Image (cartoon, rainbow, N blue to C red; front, side, top):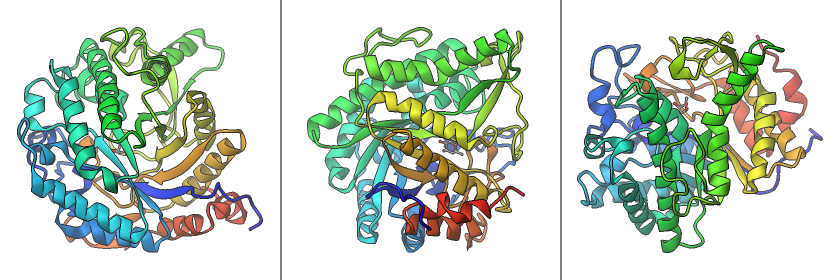
Length: 435
Ligand code: FCB
């Protein structure tokens, strides 16, 4: 291929999250919610999901290993591990320990997320991220997890996409608790940063050498109309609330407006050993004076593939390069912790995949310290309020029969992993044009 490969030891993997793949999660805030009519666009529920809790995780990860993947990012389910306040479930910890041991045996490095969207019912009943004691509850949970699982985990993520949770669950009514309040959203976001810092401190006290980070959603925002002052202003405001203010808080330890919470949460400054970036695409932002809950900015790009009303932006590999270069200012190693596209037919994914891996390579060439790429997702799974309609998997899953079928992108990604990225920046790239 002759093209430059990625740095030695680069992690090539995929991402999943507990509620989306495990099945049988009946004790978190999504279990009731997803059964209420109208909540999930296609009327499905997570139900058995991909049956990971009952053994399929090991089989699917064996497939991942056979496809050359050397890492996987998964999340663990707080509601299983602490089903009631202060009561730890030994059997649930044992289940995760077995899975992590199998991953080690398969040569798959483990990145484990503590909070990926769901909260135990009892936490939700106290107010979720608005509960008075949420910071100490989350830190206690994090500490218990690192005590019990620490030896089997390579990288820990405290919280996945805090701004998305604040936006979807507290500002809008898309996810539970569906508060529909900007104020609540900003308080929840501040609380998540505070909880992240507290968890980081607690975990490092147990295992000072542990690698602990946070994952942010890092879409690229662009003004819809070049030359429009209002579009430019609103675009900058959205970027600030969604990404900029969080980076600033993590770097300096200070919560600047509009983030709500203590001005300087204890331990927040530099509370990360790495930063994870979830990147799906780019949004074109157009000023809209009526759209208060979206900070007066409407996203007007044509979605690449429609999934109900939800779209993950417009395809822009260059946006990923630019975001990674921007994130280098944090001066910690970076991981692309999610990147993917819903494309059941696998028509667009091959080009998407090679172009985004090439974009990561370009970011490294421009000086970004990127250490891994995790595609979303290893397999089709329950996509939150969109249900089973969006298909993000390298592996197709029939949720009824549980049959797995490898999409051709799974083989393409295997070639990328096997060549340490060389094929994505080399000849194959040119032959994978968009349909
Ligand atoms: C991300 C979520 C992940 C998945 C993808 C498609 O924002 O973190 O759980 O739903 O979107």
